[in-house]
Length: 87
Image (cartoon, rainbow, N blue to C red; front, side):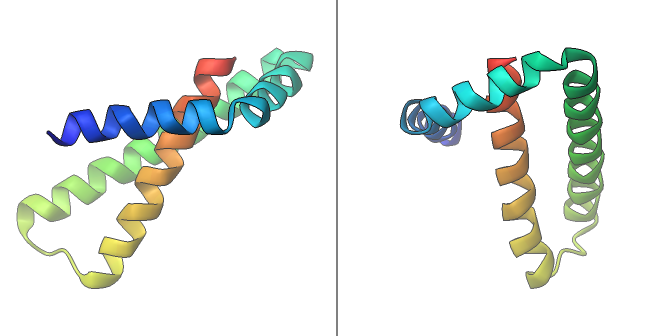
């Protein structure tokens, strides 16, 4: 069920913000070497943070402040994937 909600949110965001994502994609294509490198670095950083978050969850040392930070982390990953799809 959660994966269906996630797919819905991604599709909804893609449709709702199509013109903004298109503009970002065009800007990224003007200097593809730089934009792809930056996108890869950002994705790598967020995936590393996600790994640390999952490790804390498995150790059950997850606090309320980290819960709100995890929402921001998922939001970052969500938008980076949308942008990557436009590159």
